[in-house]
Length: 397
Ligand code: GDD
Ligand code: MG
Image (cartoon, rainbow, N blue to C red; front, side):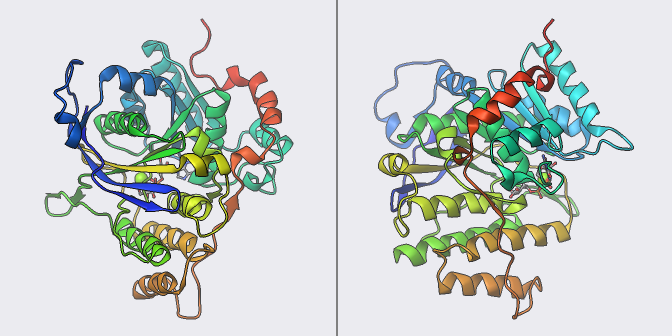
């Protein structure tokens, strides 16, 4: 794969945010010694290097009542070396959609000779394991994991740790193009291969996000992401004193982290999760507040933003859903202790303009879960390890 080298890096305390890097070539051919000058502007990431990172990576697919055909397409796009982890919050009553997902995954793993894990978010044993480990932040009153994409993601991070992986990547289940899924994972691997710090994150930016109007229109920016990016950039600008537009991936659902970084960040509930990850990194390592983790601060936290070749096409879930996503995401920025007056004003004016708030109101404060590292992982592993075969999609034959 050939990707642009990071041309510009914004520094915020010990956080290094790399400018968007475009994919130039999805397949860059056999490994050869490169003429030196190529390395300056473009990086060639060899297939073997990509495969070695994929082998250490779990790809998480959060899903809730998505069309089975889409789910099937998404799993088929995940490169063979990755461990697939499906965390589902699909209905089990009337129609047992979870069971259909599990059957599909099992059949797929059987014929492709690969391993995958699948767990239902409301699994009782999972709830018990989390309670024993002291991770009540994720649990509702019924002792089960609460609803929400982020809650599913945190569960999956713990499963990836249990499976002894080093990296975890997230890909939504409602993606129409298996080829795009394949490219996301290669971008994750390429980003990690460029990282100089073990605390790194790769966020995907789509080249286009087509909309069906009178014909197919290749739109670049989503409505929510444009506003979220503006507010995250304002947060950085007002804290550093230098205006920047470095962040283009404030809402990136498709993103990946080294588990060393993933385990030390707090997470916001639901759809606030992606902007909150950035906010958590800035709070912990931006140098405004005391550093939250000394070793990570020493190495620095590195963020890559990679623009794919494949357009992104997923299910359209309507305007109300978008309003909710915008509001919760901006709420995460607004309530951060490093969010100053200018950014707060900007957030309020964006929300007022769209009639999502009245002037007396404030955006909702995100519900935060503690960093996974803070819980008693040994206890969690002990309960889950014993039952791991029941979460496994490739039955021992
Ligand atoms: N496990 C689980 N639990 N999965 C869920 C839940 C839940 O409670 N709610 C939603 N999901 C799954 C969906 O089935 C889908 O695969 C994925 O999470 C994303 O949810 P969508 O409802 O499709 O969100 P979106 O498409 O509007 O927004 C996506 O893209 C945004 C911009 O990149 C999400 O990934 C956002 O988080 C992201 O900011
Ligand atoms: Mg979606």
